[in-house]
Length: 272
Image 1 (cartoon, rainbow, N blue to C red):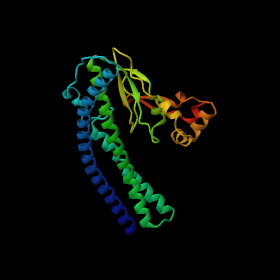
Image 2 (tube, rainbow, N blue to C red):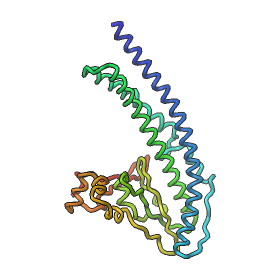
Image 3 (cartoon, rainbow, N blue to C red):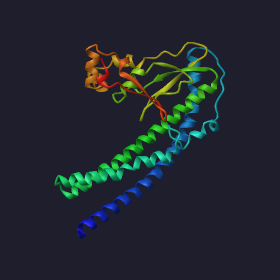
């Protein structure tokens, strides 16, 4: 009984230590995200003005436009996409570490694994889960701030009426984002994103033709079969090859009252 109680005490002490260390990391992450959001706001305002000028130049027109100020969008700093403070989202990301740690210890011991290896695995998975979530939050919220500032800049310009979606075209691209690449939306529509989404938006002006560029589907058609299969996954690739689904069918949209709209690849079982 003494050994059991001692083990419980050590386990509880370890959980407290993990919670304390993760709280410190959350403090650090929150500061970095806030700083990153501020940088993204400045960059987005600068880049959106350059994009408007570039599109006007391409269309061979001169179009004066209004410029948004940093102060007009500074309220996004320190907040997540659901409107909650960043700290609340970060704290939520760390809560599962202790439970994951305990589950690994219990299952490893029940299977008779080496105690040292069980402890290492428990720490790696328990802490890794929280660190991975925090990293995803950091990337997602900074990029969201960039896109939202761009949208605000375009809307305030009084010359941009819509935008065209542009994805990151590489082997790691989300297939939903890739196949929605090239779609045009009204400027007040908002932006459908997802965790770690790397898409951006190209403005279309009130006067002059919209910018024409290769769409994601056109880019995909030029890729070798191995790359196409990697992007789609085996199930979607076969559905597309067999003619049971088009590339447009690969894009699904969901809505959250907290987070808004998001795109995701259509589930294989929902394809034809």
